[in-house]
Length: 405
Ligand SMILES: Cc1cc2nc3c(=O)[nH]c(=O)nc-3n(C[C@H](O)[C@H](O)[C@H](O)COP(=O)(O)OP(=O)(O)OC[C@H]3O[C@@H](n4cnc5c(N)ncnc54)[C@H](O)[C@@H]3O)c2cc1C
Image 1: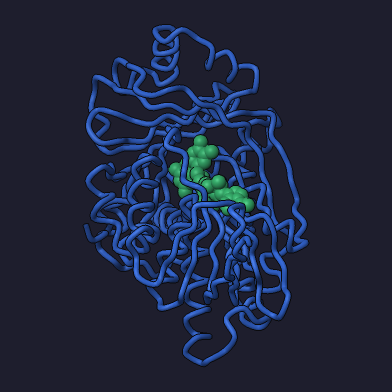
Image 2: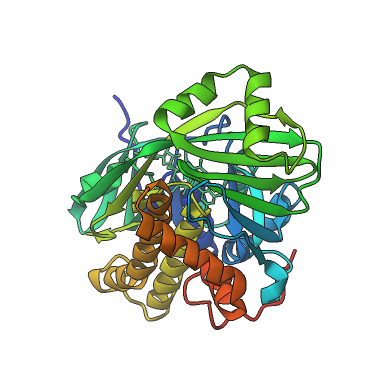
């Protein structure tokens, strides 16, 4: 007779093995919740890099993984923005320098495959954390708690399900949460480059009429590139012969890093956005790209997701101390109300910057140009923008002199 598999019980089930899911599982397990992570293994083919800002690095320190990631990460000390639109109204160059706000660096750039490998290893050996290599195929509430069906026939029961299962989230759909979805007429061409000149830990963003062209330092004489282009042009770049592509990219970078040599495969990602209309449902909280997606401009996506995780952990830990039900409606509402404005403001800021580049409408160009001019000239405004760029609400209160590492 076939044995029925037992349903194991946990405080929290995290669904999804991208960076959001793994970091959430590690954070919540460290806070003392018995946690299960249901996740298929991360793709070893992800050639992208992720720039993480100060607050995100602090979270990685808190969960004990930063020292292992740091050795393969590059410091981001300065950010340079250059108007390369060639339009009638052009903004002057602006340089944001981390030392101006008392920081050694704004953050670090990390290869996704290094980040994922360290997180996978940490999850496998963390206390309070069980990992199930599988996909969730069902969400039910037979007797109050949430029960997840897993692809291997197992099931788990939890007081709270944290959905980190990405932009096509199964949990979001199963919980009946709608989304707003939009797309842009652009794709991001993404690759890594070796170069003959040092980057000096400066990230450079050229603003072009088809979108930003951004070089972000990696360790040594290497940088990652995110080049936002029209869909046709992105396809053309992706199909170019290696030597021609290197020469074309060097031309677009005005040779600021010398000669280019391709150091990875060329990937492209169509630009789109998504916003969940709610962040919570019965015993469900959304985090990461299950809740919000926007174009890879300004390195905001995962940084925003890590703020979801930090806030969720804070709300749940407080509920735990008061012996409240961590999956109850009151607690979940508190998580949602705390996250809404950060998610809305980041989504709008990225959308606005991208659209302001695409438009040929003169008044919009004028406002963008004036904004960059003022950021370059007015010190207090520039410092406020730097702090707000790192984390919302930190504009007036960031006092840490550097990131510990
Ligand atoms: C080109 C590019 C550059 C970027 N650069 C930056 C940057 O510099 N800085 C930054 O902060 N952000 C950046 N981002 C954004 C960042 O990459 C994303 O925010 C981040 O990867 C999202 O992680 P996630 O874990 O939420 O989702 P995902 O990485 O999509 O992970 C979702 C996971 O859920 C799993 N899953 C799906 N369905 C199920 C199921 N039913 N059961 C179990 N598991 C399931 C999937 O297999 C996947 O592993 C960039 C994005 C792009 C496209």
